[in-house]
Image (cartoon, rainbow, N blue to C red; front, side, top):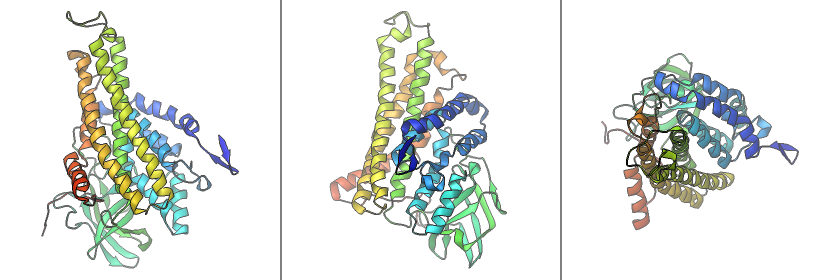
Length: 403
């Protein structure tokens, strides 16, 4: 370990020494979990034991003191092992960043030490039906410490793996964030996510029925109510890190399959697929996609380091990072989707075998890519470039102009 100012700090090699073996164990069971649709409770337990959730927590509070760039480097590697897990932990990381930026020293230390002890935070923001374009239907009512939370949320990503759930709610017409214990009375979680990809993210429905909430668990403005914020670029970058990891795993899986393959076609250019220049071209495209996605994610993560080190409120830095993440979506999404489609050109019908589950790479990439639809992001970029329009710092899904 590197020693700086009498404190232990962790460089990339140190962090790899801790986490690379865990990621390798997680990767071993990826196909079997996909086939069985088994949520990764055991694997999340391995990450908790190694304090993966405390990567950004300062060393003095029991964490690793990692930079944002170091965090995203490991998120890409974890996504290559199991793409569901970085997405499941997405809001956990922004919760930690919020604590790092908090002016409440006592609460800051309390939550950072809890995270260092293994605490994970999930989320319950999006609502079924009308949703939050006009307002949240989930309500926080009452006063003082006699508060009650009622409502239903969908896409509660990672909450089945979490100790606490960050809930977006309406309180007297204002958006608030409420931190609820996942096992609190009145909380019911369902594993009913029915998407064709990212099936193990624990992104199901969560119901809140008269859940008791103390005043200290009301954390301020809810999602979409804080104006310019680092959180939109940060959360979007997690999704791009997932895509970078998917591309890397698709490259690794396809390369291993081609290397062992002896079957080819009468009109192929070589006796073995690995010597066929057309097959080599597909592998080259996969390698390029993985490199492009990883490079863009880490470049923007470095800019987030600069923004957060400056307190997270500098409008010029905020706009710059938001713009870069928006533009990176086009490059990463289209490149990874194309590569995970083209990988099937390296073989015949045998490459579609269920035992390989190579289709999961495209399915997972396709699903993670539509969480923030690219067509709307590209329009926002164009309006910004042409007309100087502000970039959207928060967005919601639901029916507009709900009664």
